[in-house]
Each structure stands twice: as C-alpha cells, then as structure tokens.
Image (cartoon, rainbow, N blue to C red; front, side, top):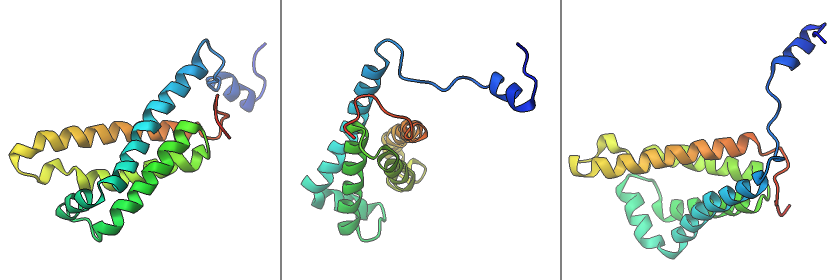
Length: 152
C-alpha cells in the first residue's frame, strides 16, 4: 500500500526505532553499560582516594580551586558511572557524564599546549575522552527508552 499523506510518507521512509529485541542485545547492552559505567565510576572513586595528588595535577593544569574541583568531578563520575551501569536515572547519569567530559577534556588534556615530550600522551587521553563523550551521547540519546536489566 502506498502512503497517501505527507506524514505517512515520512513515517514510511524513517528507519524503525532500534529496540532491544535481538538475540543477546539486552545482555550486550548491559555488558557495555557495566564496562563503560564501571570504568568511569572507578575513576570517580579514585578522585576521592587520591584527592591530594589529583588536586595537584588539576592545579598544575590551571583548574581553579582544584581542592574543590576534584571531589566535585569525582562525585559526577561516580554518580554518572554507577547510574549508567545500573540503568538508574539514565538521562541524568549520561547527561552528567557528557557535561563532565565536554568541560574537562580540553582543560586536562590540552595536547596542543604541552611540551613536545607530553604531546602524544595528552593526545591519546584527549581522544579517549572524545570517544567516551561519543558513547555518553549515544547513551543519552536512548536514555528515555527502557533499558534491559535496569535496576530502576
């Protein structure tokens, strides 16, 4: 049957919304969430366990009030990582991770402004954060869809 209205035509040409009904899709999505969220939550926890060293590094990078910034960003990472891993408040959790990564990546991994011997390491970390930003944005984009194995 051919579409008879503009809206039918548009709907018929749009791809179907991706679901979690394929074989092992829910399980793979859960594993991805656990890996992604778990690493970020671990890094957030490290902000508290190694706060003095991290504040020194943040201060050297020009972060204002590094003694306050480190625990605040640690809390964001811990909340966002655990939220994504558990599927709890996914919009808020993924959004928090996007904000953290967008705000901190150019400050903490400014490869263009470091001595030559530090450029490669900072570029690697910058690009790693860009990739994680992409993953967090993808999770944010589907955060209003019911996530398989979510705790809430």
